Length: 261
Image (tube, rainbow, N blue to C red; front, side, top):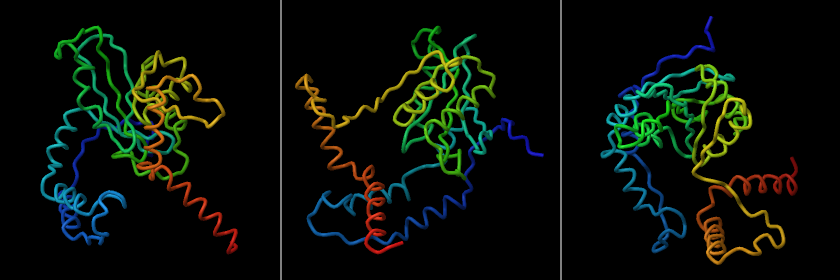
């Protein structure tokens, strides 16, 4: 019987046939027509997308990145019915604090490749050996090799609960948590679901948006108000990806209202 508590060694090895198939499909893209002279007003220009596709077809070296990722010990395990992939990188320093790193959207564990060395072996990077950590870097459910997901409901609380279970499974009694983007929310939630184990949380991106309450922005400095205007501009001009689900939901409700179920 399959032991769902087992931690299994993992190595990335994408079949060459899949890479060849991707290049073949990229070579056969059917390009959409666009209005003349619109630039970026109607989305990403076709010419720019063509450059990206050509890069992915002929310039990007997946095998080089595969080898780079495979430099680090990787594992998979099953938690809450979900396959979870993670790196576990130990430090040459003794008795170091484990640190759980969580990436964001639309990202991956590759976000942390440049900090693995300085965090696990600071001496080799001109740092203080006392600042060394042992790293656990999981792929969020549904991302990269932690997938595919087979259930709905993988919100930040459920991911954080899975991360706490992962750290217990690896034998860590106490550890820190850090992250960026969605990794921010997940890391903060890990601190809430496992307060007896998490000694501290560090995040590099805080989501704090206006609630729209009267007088909410009173007393803010000019540079802070300017930042709020920048945030408003982002929401109005390049935040469509964040608005689309709500628009589709509203459209669906209106359709049922006018046309029936």
